[in-house]
Length: 215
Image (cartoon, rainbow, N blue to C red; front, side):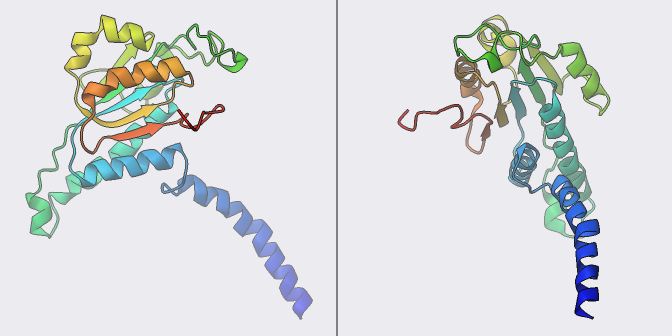
């Protein structure tokens, strides 16, 4: 009897449980990865009724840019439902929060740099602006007032489009994934005037690549 029971448990474990765990991880938005971080960041922003922009520096193929938009749409639907809540305090809150999305990248791969790492040599991680825009449009991210793209080295963008940047929304969420130290520094210089109390700053490369604990 015990042998039969063990065989049944083994079958259930290997045919169902172990196959379902990856599916659960994939669809559990509280997971500890980039998507989970974006989900939690938007939850913090929305629940604190913050307007403001989502800034991403280092877009590559635009996957996290689109993930952030998807997370925002989930909360946006929730916000709209509050106007019909049976709880008066929810209906009284102004949930008409304005959020825009700004993508910063060379869209020509890694820029010239002195990192001395072949993984980040000039031209690596190449994805064109047209590719990113096209993928975004498939989920409703059409370039306009809410969706903007900034093409070029961050330091060049800061100089050439300074007036436009100054008119962008304050930062609600900032996602920096530039891989290069110089690019991360330039991104922080661009975003510094946009930071405010409550801004969520996500650094993909924090403490990576033999980071010096003393600096």
